[in-house]
Length: 49
Image 1 (tube, helix red, strand yellow):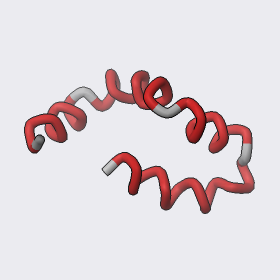
Image 2: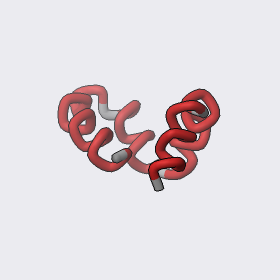
Image 3: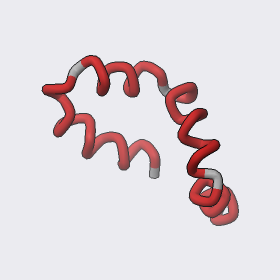
Image 4: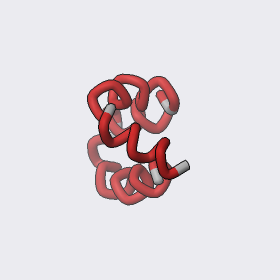
């Protein structure tokens, strides 16, 4: 699992493209709901972790 995390960091650019694909719902909400940026921000890293 640790290796997976490392790969994610190394492939940040590649993962970035896959990130929205993995969870298009939260990602789209974040862009659409700019007002909810602070609320989605704290949840984003939590889900990513």
